[in-house]
Structure formats: structure tokens, C-alpha cells
Image 1 (cartoon, rainbow, N blue to C red):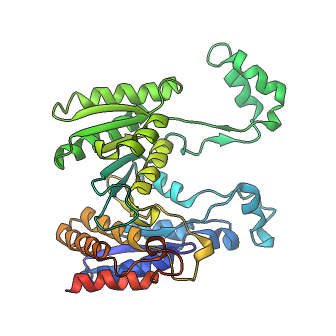
Image 2 (cartoon, one colour):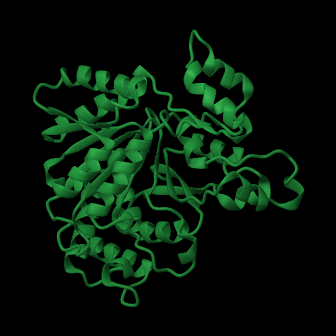
Image 3 (cartoon, rainbow, N blue to C red):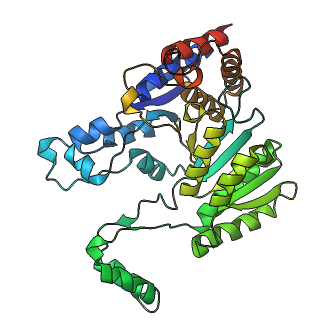
Length: 381
């Protein structure tokens, strides 16, 4: 019997290609796992009306963790148009399966390392080594939103006791059928959890600072809560500098002085934004790995999308997926395997002999599998 059971979820587009390339490295390491196929993605939305079938949820409940490739998402109207004919009049509404997974399994922490490996010509600087902690289940991506705006919600928001009657007046004037609302709901518990994890990581890994990325001057209640909690948690870690930056300002400062930062922590949407910026500093999304971590389960995924225009062409960069596999090994406690895998990735990047088109230039790059094979070869050596 294998030591681990890993749910295998290629998803959409290039997800299967990058996962196949990553598996070469896991096999070269001798990682003892049984990979359990699990259905997820656009194909299952179109033919079943559910991009995250119940059978997949049950599969995940019987595995140690999951590897996930990529997902395709489209606006509501387009999603309905692509449903099988017999499903179009069923009142089905598309939802992001990865967001639902995060909520179902309480994968409260999205961890995104962004490290510049020497030799990568796409690095902004070679001394960048950042880690982003993104709250994963609340905030702007919590999924509580409406269009059109229901009258009872609008009236509640306009109520004298709890709402904002003057601010809501203009929305009534525009017609509620023309108004969409997305919420940003955050809890003290969610804020404290992500902030404390960021400081704990900094403490355990010799990091010098933790920077809160927020916008409390405008988002006074939610941003104010996060800021107060951050300052409170920071007092428990006197050896680590607590910094604060607005989301717009950090985008400038990260371009000017990225080497000044260490660990960053943010709510859901701001964490998504700043982590993609960090990825751009170290070579792009082709090098950006991520983990969705809960108390008992984790789903590991690269941060790039499904890239449908490249599907089947075997050209996309698998390094993000390979480094995501490294994060899985670390989470499972296979630290030495993770170290060997990262060392192999670093050597392949430093040598620069085998790389995809985003590194070498269009028409010059090697295939997805060629890069996977080269990393596996370095491991075997």
C-alpha cells in the first residue's frame, strides 16, 4: 500500500500537461503515492451542470491532499450558453470550483512563495525572496453577491438604524435591476488566523518583517478590523518588524524596492493581486506556485490559469507546477524530497539549457515535457 493518497485533478486546459511534467519529478524522487483521479472543471460544468461533482468531494475526503492543475471560469451568461442543451433551462449558475473547495474544506490559508532563482533572465532582481499569506475563505472572494440587487437587501442597506439611506438613494434612482453588489465580509477570527500564521512563518524561518497589505483609509470597517488585528498579533512577535502598506502603494514600492520586503499578509482579493505582482518580479506565473492549506487538508495548485489557447501544444512552463509539488512534499513532511526537488529546479534554471518559450523567446523554447524531463534528470543525478 502506498504511503500517501493524492487526489489528482488536472482540471482544464494546460492543467493536465503541467501536472504530467511535475509527476516525472515526483517519480524520480521515489515519492510513494497513489494518485486518485478526481473530476473537476469546465467539462463537468458543461455536461453535468456542476464543475465540482459530489463524487470529487468524496474522493478528496479519502485522500491526504490534492494536486490541482488549472481551471477555466467564464461570466454567468457565457457559462450558461455552454451548458448541454438539456441543462440550459434548469436555473443552474456557475461557481468557481476552487473557491468552493476552499470553503468546503476550510482551506483558510493561501500560501504563495515568490523566489528569484539565479540565472532566470526574467527575474526583476536575483535577490527577491518573498512569501505572501492570503486569507482564503473570506473577503471579496467570499461569494456573497447579487445582480440584480434584491429590493429587500437594498432596503436593509438603506435602513436608518443599520444602513446608509443617503448613499443608497442614488442606487434606487438608477433602478435596482441595474445594480450589482459584491460584499467584503471579514471576521476577527479569519484576520487573526492569517496574521498569526504569517508571523509564525517569519519566526520559524528567520524572516525579519511582516507587511500588512490593506486599504483601511477607504475600506474603514473591514480594513480597519484587519489592521487592528494585525497590530495586536504583532505585539506577540517583538523580534519581527510589523509594516503596513496600502494595496495601491505596495504595487509601487514592490517595483521600486522588492528586496526590502519579506513576508506579506493580506485578505483574499488584495492577496491575489499582490501575489501576482510578486510572481511578475521572479519570472511570471510560469514560476508561481501556491498552496491552499487548512487544519487537516490541503490543495496544491500553480497560480496560472488554464491558458486554453495553448492547450494541447505542450509549450507552457511547468516550473510553477513542479514547485507546487515541492510545497506538497514539504506539507506532507517530506522535507528532504522537497529540498532535492527545489535544488534540481534551481540547477535547470541556472544552466538555462532547457526552458520553455516564455524564457527563451517564442519559437526558441523547449516543450513542457522536456523541461519536466530535465528536472527529473537532475534529481536522478
